[in-house]
Structure formats: structure tokens, C-alpha cells
Image 1 (tube, rainbow, N blue to C red):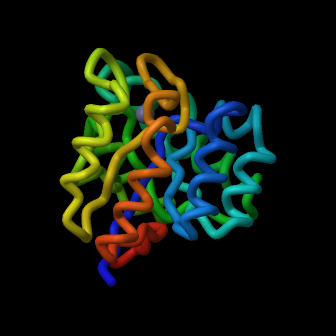
Image 2: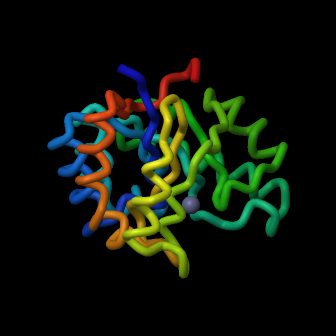
Length: 191
Ligand SMILES: [Zn+2]
């Protein structure tokens, strides 16, 4: 049995996060949710549900501002305040940080590290957003999973995300992964 690390960004979302959680529960798999602080603050019960069901709750900044479009001071605050919201809800500091749009910035990585978070991007994207975010294309991309990858998907509808398209194929994708001996688990710090 080989592992993969499914990750869901930009939630929690009152419509799509519960559906993703249901699909994961049926497949008996675990994932990591990179939550946006403002969303988590609005729907804390969804964060608590995900944590209670064994998923990892990770920091995706306070308000999802583009890392390159703000001062270093603001960029650091985005990391710190995102982590603070999650700590308040789950009772402990997050272990991982992922910058919005995957845009790395040294001061954000440093701030995350100071807060005990490892900065984590991904190996394979479902591209479940924008004009290429169609269910059949998402399924095709996810069929390329080999094992050990960190996989990027979205449960939040931020900007151009297509969680509705993802959810059309996610149950079947998880069945196929299981049949190939691949299981998703929550990120662990030695990945
Ligand atoms: Zn994002």
C-alpha cells in the first residue's frame, strides 16, 4: 500500500466542504485542508468537523491576498493571522502553510517557520479551476497519480475554482486509487 497526500485549498465552504468530507469518509481516506482564515472564521464548525474526522487543518493565509502584491509586513501578517484563526478553532497551531496561488515569498516562509509551520506546495495539480477545470479533464489528470505525491485540489469556490466539477469525479477517482493500492493520508511533517 502506497500513500498519497490529497490536499484541498480555499475552504471551508458551506456547500462543498461537507461534500468532500462525505466522499473522503466513504473512501476511508484522509486529507489536508488548507483553509483561508476569513473562511474558517465564518464556518468554524466545518473546520472542527474536518479535524474531528482525522484530517489535517493547514494554513492558507488569512485572506488569500496575492503574496507578491503586498508589503512584507502585510505578507507576514497574512501568515500569522491565518494561523491564529485556525489555532483558535482547533486548539492547536497548524503544522503546514501554503501560500495563495502557490507563490513563494521568503518572508512568508520564514514567518510560517517561526510559527511552527512547514511551507508546502504540491507535486500534481488537478487544475480544478478556470477553463480547464472540467470534470473529465480533472479525472484524467488525477489518473496520473503514481504514489507519494502531494495533490492539489480545491474545496473552496474562491475565484475561478470548480469544486462542483471536481466532486463529479472525486468519488470514482478515490475508488480507482484504492483499487491500485493507493490511499490518501493527511500530511505528516516528514514528507
Ligand atoms: Zn488558494
